[in-house]
Image (tube, rainbow, N blue to C red; front, side, top):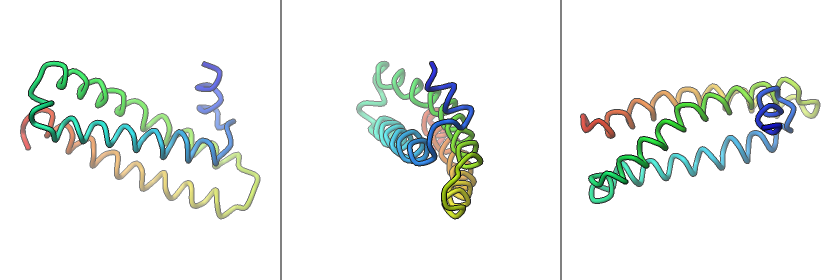
Length: 113
């Protein structure tokens, strides 16, 4: 729980926050959700739907959380200013991608796409 608080306050280094919690975990979530929701045989089973909904729900919460954490960590970054600026640009891109993916995933999960 201390790690979650430190992330939220921007106290974890920008590199760790961005690469480990921002990129790696979100890529794993995206790949998992995409695989399950696009695999008709797996998605048509109750466990497949349950896992898909759980990943979707976790992504709904985790991605905004970590985007805010990256922004806050970038605000506290004391190194080269360019890294802080680039991280913030990527947070903005991340928000746009998040909204797009959540809308597309919702359509797939509900069977409307």
